[in-house]
Amino acid sequence: MELQERVDVTVFTDVDKERFLKKIYPLRKPAVLRGVPLGPCLEKWTVDYLSERGGHREVKIHVSSLPQMDFLHKNFVYRTLPFAEFVQRAAAVEHPEFFISKHESYYLRSLGEDARKEPANLKKQFPDLAEDFHIPPFFQSDQFFSSVFRISSSGLQLWTHYDVMDNLLAQVSGRKRVVLYSPQDALHLYLSGDKSEVLDIDSPNLERYPDFVKACRYECVLEPGDLLYIPSLWFHNTLALQFGVGVNVFWRHLSMDSYDKKDPYGNKDPLAASRALQCVERALAGLEELPEDYQDFYARRMVQLIQSRAYAAQPTQPAQ
Image 1 (cartoon, rainbow, N blue to C red):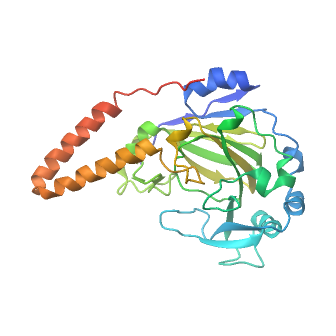
Image 2: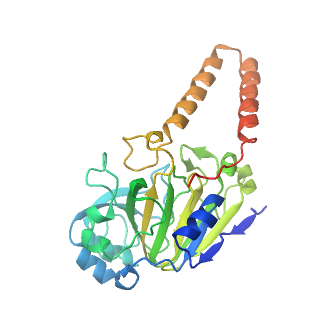
Image 3: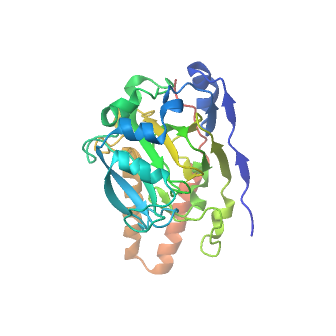
């Protein structure tokens, strides 16, 4: 099988705000930041401590009979458990009580109080645990969008997707493999919205997805205490090598009016991008009035116009 080009994500140590903003952030590439102070969570957040301090507030979780979760085809169900019970189950290999099977996998992506309107915020949903976690001061406080609690069973793998905001993934406990793909490889990832249809990135079906091998694979393994900087639009796929606890912090790096104000998850395309994509869809629909050979010809001309703009563009450095 033809292999993808592979690149190790660069690891930086002794990173403070100035070094991050001047040396790392402008590169617009993923980076592992090692040794950044995250607070007492690194020592305190054991399974028992999380269960005790997190309490019995109910959380909505993903439950799957397979550890490789597929959002496009929904091979999981949503269930609700008290947080303390969820943590105990997620840390266990076999479950005497279960929803689907005794070896089912669990995943929590915390939500806001009103999941349809409010972003997740660790300080609001889990105040007793939030005091143990220190958000790295790598962005202005008014740029903050959300802090998402993520807890997963060992072996759980999440689908490949992109986010429209810059974010930091803090790995508090457990080891996690992260595979990333550049936005410039989007055409090789067989997208459906913000997600890749290629579920198995380690053994892809190349008859169905032949161009997938053209995408360059960036990879790292996060150890407890590591931060992974994931620039916006970079695709990422995570695999929990052990039961793991982490916090994802997202911030708005574009102007505030670029984002959809009714987006509590922070995963909707910027408003200008959404309008442009809608224009393309309307243009393609307009071609349906023509015979098939004309549709093909003018669709190719549209592709040429888009390619001349997209491939000529170079990533710009964000304003500081």
